[in-house]
Length: 203
Image 1 (cartoon, one colour):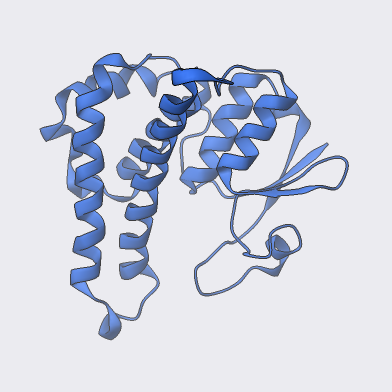
Image 2 (cartoon, rainbow, N blue to C red):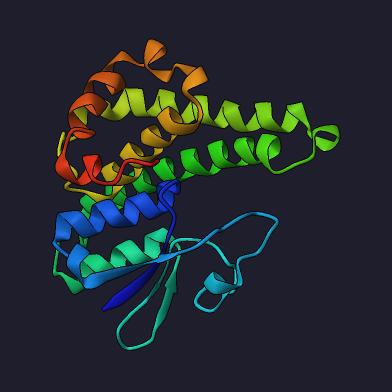
C-alpha cells in the first residue's frame, strides 16, 4: 500500500484525500499519524520529506513524494483519472485555480502561525494583516470566477479552492467570508456536500 503522513487539520492533506476519494484510491492508502509543526520538527515525517511537512507520500516502490500538487498529480496518473487535464487551455485553467486555492491556504496558514506558533511578545500584527489581505484578494477572485465552476470535485483546481474555503471555516470563522461573497457561498454549499468533501472535513 501507499503510505501517507496525515493530519486531519491540514487543508493540503484534505486536498490529497479528496483526490483519492474521487479516484477510488482510499483503500490503497495507509494513513500514518504525524504532528507537523513550523517550529517543532516531526522526524517521522522527515524520513519521507526532508522538509518534515505534510502531506508526504511513500509509494509501494519506496518513492517519496511531497507537496500536495505532486501527490495529487501522481494519484491522478496512477488511476488514469481526469482531475488534471493533460493539455490545452483546460490544463492551465485547472492548474491556475489550484494555485489560487493553494495560495489562499498558504496565506491563511501563515496568519494562523503568527498567532498560534509565535510567542505573544514577538507577534507582528502587520504581518498577519498582510496575509489576510491576500486571503480577501483570493476570495474576490474566486467570486469573479465561481459562475463557471462545477459543483462536483471533478477538477484539482476546484478541489484546492474547496479545501481552502473549508480551512477558513475551520480556522477563521471570524472572517465570515460568506457575507461578502454570496456566489461563492452558494457554490460551496453544494460542493462541500459531495461525499469526498464530507468524508474529509477537518477536525
